[in-house]
Length: 85
Ligand SMILES: [Zn+2]
Image (cartoon, rainbow, N blue to C red; front, side):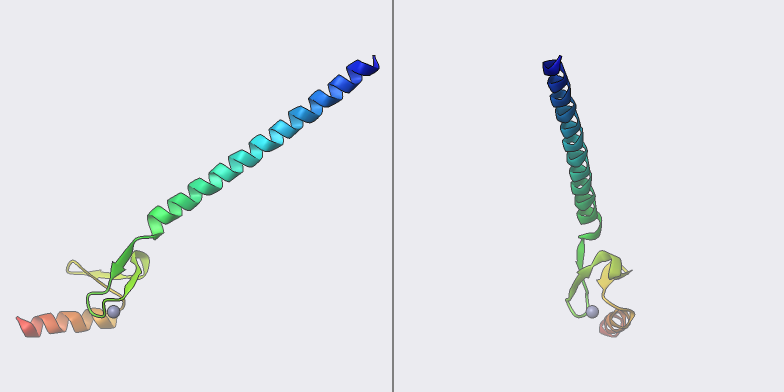
């Protein structure tokens, strides 16, 4: 009778430990997927056509097929192109 109780307790402990490990693994996997997704979406770097500085795509301006770090540089670049041609 006593042995059966011990077996039950051991089984219960193993069961909950396994459940906890499984949850930890699931959370860890979810975290990794989120990090991978963030890297794929926000990690793209582009270069300002005027000052050659690299910046994330999200912060950049796009105009006439070129990337710019600011409106000021876009205006300067387009102005120079207009003068040059
Ligand atoms: Zn720039």
